[in-house]
Image (cartoon, rainbow, N blue to C red; front, side, top):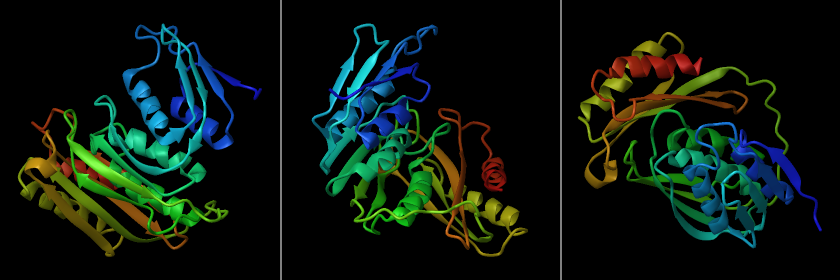
Length: 279
């Protein structure tokens, strides 16, 4: 019988699951938020476990009746075509980031469609993960066919967005050294807007260019305006920036409107916030 690692509390819920999958060691998480008013496992964490169950063959997931304890025995990450509807309490990025972590254990090609909120504040957007995580994965040894496509954008709280994560397991894993990030060579980015005037996206780019021109003139920021079905169910806009260095490191920053609160939100302040976060 394989030994089980016991973990007290759910402070690193996703990390514990990911390490269990990568090491193939079962875990038991106990006393989940036992001293909090809203105790036990949250709905979005149960949703993550449903995703894990859909992705893996032979996994065992047992949640106690009071929600205070979880037993998880990892199965095999076989791949294939999977579709999952994410919780509305956390964006797609919460789930997509987790899947990129466990992708080293993938056996065959994966095509994963995640539906929900593509952009909001508080968690990495699909844009940020597409830039930063894919760059790291390719340095490790993943093929260029490993990609993230944003099919529809969906801002919080109602979402309505979707992305497809295509992943091909690497033939070999390369060691990486990022102790020296190097010097910045250029800045790129995307200004996104959904169910608002397309001029807002142009203003985001204009303010960012003006603010970043003191650092470098190698700036390329594109606009991505989505309307009707392609723009999801809630209005919102924001800016994702990333800077590449001569050592192949990518640094990402982003800022956007507060969920359900467009009134008084200034495109200039969002641009400045994203720019300041980058350096």
